[in-house]
Figure 1 (cartoon, rainbow, N blue to C red):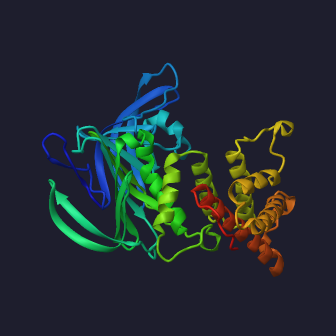
Figure 2 (tube, one colour):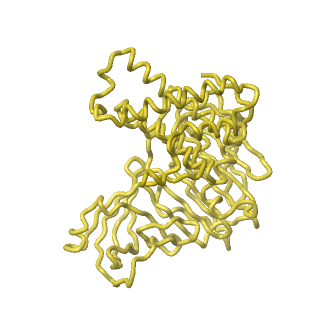
Figure 3 (cartoon, helix red, strand yellow):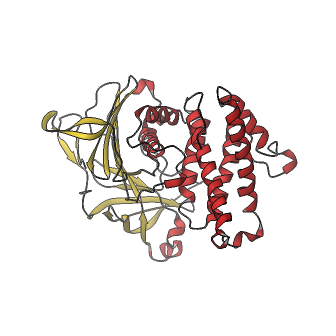
Length: 425
């Protein structure tokens, strides 16, 4: 992975403050964080390993009493609010966050020593990088399944001070030259995808620019039926350089619960439509993400009942979001009495073309399977694992689960703009 960035004024190359490709340890000039209206400051050591993430060893002391709770450190406005701030050297600051429940607060007040793990670190500098006026660039490294096939032949290039020093043609890549966005991606290893992107800053909000790498990751995940994971993402805007390093995590294949029909090679049209929808970050984008990643999260547990509960309740969540009907604690005030009338509204809006009769049957099945899987798993017998059910009954519940997931796939396709879809279950 790349580790050199250009200085804006004199083209001098700066390395990141430690070697990210191997286990590293770095002394930090200072670490600062707020806890219980007290600001703590100290020094210490950061350790990095891509398999384990980051580990901080530090000795701190209270330096300031705060009048009120603060929003913590954000650094550049494009960086989400973080809990810890690290001053590494004259060039680099860093930010990260961790749940305080992961370490003992009492030992902090007793000894001033903290030892804590966290899975990412956001490095920031406002002194670096030459950037074309009006252009925002980014780079990402993703971990992806080894058998993922990409459709394009692309060129892999290494430049030093703007001069091309190495070029190689890659057969398995992704090349998009759209008016709004340019993407060039290729596999640098069987399961490591390196991707660079470029947009005109006038066409994207600052939030959308920072979130573009995440939207690309999620679009890749949905199109390929797996949870693509970040290893690193870089963001270059004007003179700002942001680098986020992230602990390696395994991908998960959704297998028979994959909501979209799996093609051998990534479908570029589908990828672009999903990406465009996710960039908008509106209610449709929230529904698309929720339907896919709720299935992925459900597969992390071993209990079939929990699978069924999580997947079935996704339907109500999606409908409430789409029709803007938040949950009400008082049932009398809740306009959402059942999914059926809202399913009918969804059907009339997206699925009333050539295959109207077929879709009517599908929506009736969805309503029935939702009720069966949703309500059977709120019964006290949930403690009785479905794995002990008769084979026929267990298979029937698996089939209902798969059916709902496939239906969610059609909802995703409809929300990203596909029309006159033919149901094939």
